[in-house]
Image 1 (tube, chains in turn cyan, purple):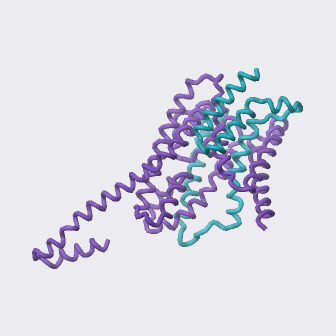
Image 2 (image 1 turned 180 degrees about the vertical axis):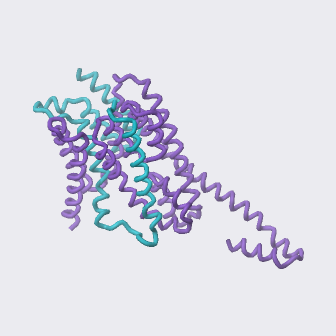
Image 3 (image 1 turned 120 degrees about the vertical axis):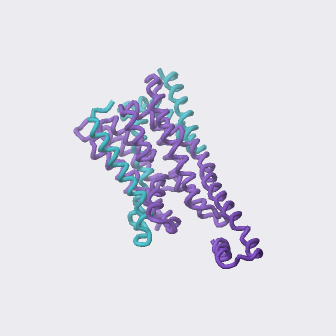
Amino acid sequence: MNEYSMFSIWAVIVAIAIATYLIRLSFIHLFGRINQVPARIKRFLKFVPAAVLAALVAPQLVTPSAAVTEMILDERLLAGVVAAAVAWWRGDILATIVVGMIALWTFQFLLF
Amino acid sequence: MSGNETASAGQDDSPDPDARTALEPEPQDQRLLSRLLHADFRAGARDSIGILLGLIPFALVFGIAADSAGLSTLQTIAMSAGIFAGTAQLVMVELIDANAGLVIIVFTGLVINLRMLMYSASIAPHFTEYGKKTRAYLAYFLTDHVYAVSIGEYADEDSDRNKRLYYLGLGVSIWLVWVATTIAGFVLGAGIPDSWNLQFAIPLVFLAILIPAIDAYPQLVAALTSALVAIVAALAVSQTGLPEGADLLIAASVGIAAGVAAEEVMGQ
């Protein structure tokens, strides 16, 4: 549960919706005047998905701890490794979710 | 086009029967043309089916996450219908659930969606034949999948499909299913017990998008660096006064820099 006011959440949604639309429209609208994303910016944009997604996933799978065994024998990390293997092998969202959830429940059952 | 011109020219100045037979193909052509247009929209819709199989679980997870973050039904629908960008939506909901700063949420959402600049630039040459208004509504449907499939279709030189209708066939069907499945997830989410740990599906969705995106060593460097920094930064956020969500921005920035640097080193 979040602690924002109704208004703040609406403001965030509307702001991102408008900004996202303008990003989409940008070159489609400007074509003829500016036709290319500058190469320097492109170099950075290319890495945005991998970097952002990795930063989102990692802390949810690993809890830093002095006890290394405890860190590795974490059902979320183990299920994450299994799911990553499925994602790599199949490249399929549904298969990744299904196998990952089953792996989580299995490791939870085995480890506790 | 040229068929139309000859036919209407014939209608204007020659009332004799020979000319009338020459006219015959015109309505035929017209009907054929509209049928073709229609078929192109359907072709786009048909080509969206494979994508929908991947997007449906994603939309369900988003709906469930929105429910557990405490968003209202209307806010959830507004996000799917208005923002129409799965990864950004899911990240936003995660940050809202963590009570991150509003500026951080907006900034992160924007950074994630900035990649669409590249799609916009890449697809723009294919839309130059359309007017401002048409281009304005076409832009609304520009997602990762609509972009990828359309550009593949446009690159096929044997294909003479109408670009606008094919694109709309894809975009409209993906939009409809995305919004509808989000609502389904939101409703379902309320009925699923917390002990199932369905929240874990969120990092799983991110993994499913992340892993195929790593197609070269610099991408791997970016992802691994970002992951390591994120784990440390998450600890820092929980133990210091850093705002929630700051860890994500720090980790992603370092990861992007590492990727650019790796490419620089390996590329030379």
